[in-house]
Every structure is written in structure tokens, then in C-alpha cells.
Length: 225
Image (cartoon, rainbow, N blue to C red; front, side, top):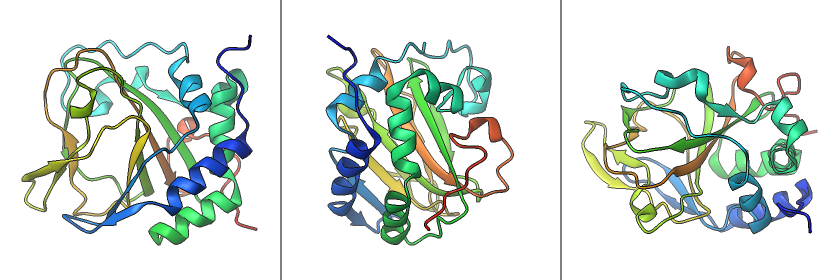
């Protein structure tokens, strides 16, 4: 038996496109989209089976920069080593997938670069209210949380005054998409994490992105042709 089960980029792309076409848009407190059933089960299994340890947290300052050296990005080396990483990166690099994302969320994806981070938060992790930097053209958070308390581990949403107005659902294999802007305040309020809060952040970033070591295809910008 092969485990995790193999998965192709075509299967991932087909599944993701179906989910994206059923996305629900909400304009409060800022424009975002909610999606369900993002990844095929085989891909979820492949990601959860990656031999990647959660960061060992000391005192954190409410940013992921506290443990930059322990973060996990789907880089060319990860693509080469793990079929799940390769399938997901190849799927989100495809012109048809990138084009549909750009059309759905109304941003120019041509010439951008794909960035994927696998996040494993343990107890003590939190994020202060923030909005993403302009170099991120598109942000999507996919929840892969397991356990009886996982439903309460969604991203916290704030209004323009940084007042907490709600939280995203952390239902397994669901996602939230938003286009970064000065009003897109979000974070993760301190609360107990029993187990590991697993999620992925997927971005398309501008060519000016400096940390090229974080990119899935550092030498291949998105092309819709």
C-alpha cells in the first residue's frame, strides 16, 4: 500500500476549481470569500503526513517573525521531496486556476509569484491584529485543524477600528480568501490550543517580493497564456 495516497495536480486543480466556483462572498467588515471542500482527501492526508515539526515557541510578540527560521514554505526542495507539495504547487501555478482566482477576486495575477506556507500553531501562538503588506496581491487561509476544539481556531476578524467583530470558521478543509488592503484587519486572539492548529496560507505576491526563498517557483512567474 502506498501511503499517503498519490495525488496529481490535475485532480487538485479540478477539485479546487469546483470549490472556488461555489464560494460565498461577504462584504462585512471587508470583502472576503468563504469556501468549503478545498482539497481532495488524498491531498489533505499528504499534507498532514509531512514530517514537519511545529515551531518550538518561546515568548512570542504576536507576529510570525518571532520564529522565522522555523517556518515551513513549499519551496522547490519541498516540491521535489513530497508529492503532495508538488501536486498543490503545480495546481495553483496552472493558468486556468490562476485566471479563475484573478477573475473571482478581481486582482491581476499575471506576472505574480506563488507563495505557500504550512503553519502549525501550538499553545501559546497568537497573532496581533494586522493587515497584509501591499506586496501580497491575494491571501487565502485553508484550515486543516483536527480535534474537538478545532472549530474555535479560526482567524479573528476586526473592523477598521481594530474591534473584534467575529471569527472565521475553522471547519476542516474550509478556507477564507481576501484581497489585502488597509482595512483587512485580522489576527488570532490568545486562547488555548490543545493539539496543533494546522493551516495553510497561500499568496500570489508581486515581483518585488524580497524573500524569494519562500516562493514555490522563484524563477517562474504566473503566466496566463
